[in-house]
Amino acid sequence: MTDPDTSAAARDHFAHCVQVLGGVTAASRRLDIDERAIRRFINGERPLGPTLLADTAQVLRRLIADAQAAQAGLAPFIGTN
Image (cartoon, rainbow, N blue to C red; front, side, top):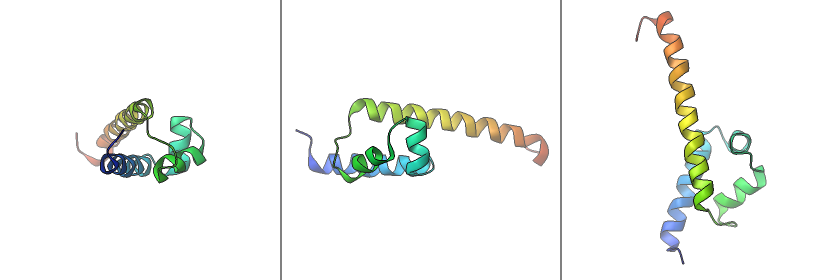
């Protein structure tokens, strides 16, 4: 069984990731998961599985790549690399 402290820490970090993704609605779209399910994961009503966490990490990596590309596109306009 999972240590409750670790489980709470995982839920808290998952909730933070959801906020980084733009909130529950945006995370729901990006992860292709119902908003209610996202809230249940955060509230501890449903267990966080390794597949969900891996999918979340992958979506965050895509968001990072998109943000870096957007930033690079701004560089010529603001005189930075």
